[in-house]
Image (tube, rainbow, N blue to C red; front, side):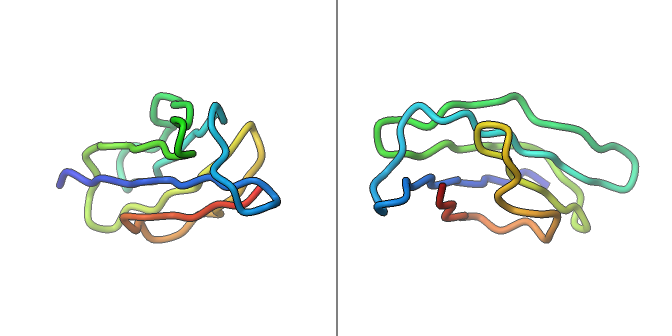
Length: 81
């Protein structure tokens, strides 16, 4: 199943954080690994589109720091630095 995940990154003042490195780790029954890294745009957003099975989980890292620990895939994540 094709999934789309939008990661919104905000700085400590609640403003969008452009240029941040976002990595998504995908955990599936037969195959796990990271998706290609993306940088947030001028609005602090990075979108990932990928195929995943129905029981897949993910984790999200921003600039190498864990921000969302392994859990069910949602379509939208708000991450604060």
